[in-house]
Length: 173
Image (cartoon, rainbow, N blue to C red; front, side, top):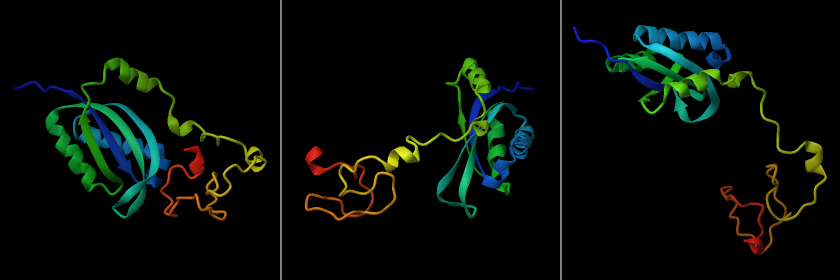
């Protein structure tokens, strides 16, 4: 009988955000999926929770779980099929990760878990933002309040909101 060759794979799972709040349940779900496929799970990390570009299984948000595992190439189809049949797993993308070394896997294992870290503080405290001068006051407020002050003739903003330089006067360009 031919010997199984295990390759290193990287998988990004999209799960319902409610499941991701209970990390043990989410990790157990991924572990069961890997066990069914006879895969060896090396690392499993909660990556982030984000709004989706379009709804998937009627979900507008999803948590991303990044996993590295070793498996036979023939078992990848089973992982994808089991993901499609799951009610809580929305999507999966599995890629071969031969470019990732064992040292990099160990480094990822040693990284602190993102879900335990507090959210990053804002750039400036609210008190510092309130007292600053209003240079370019004819543009959209930099803090995103959405309130415009009267436009001048030099203002080229069409109001679509997709301009990256809302706080730059035309003279400064």
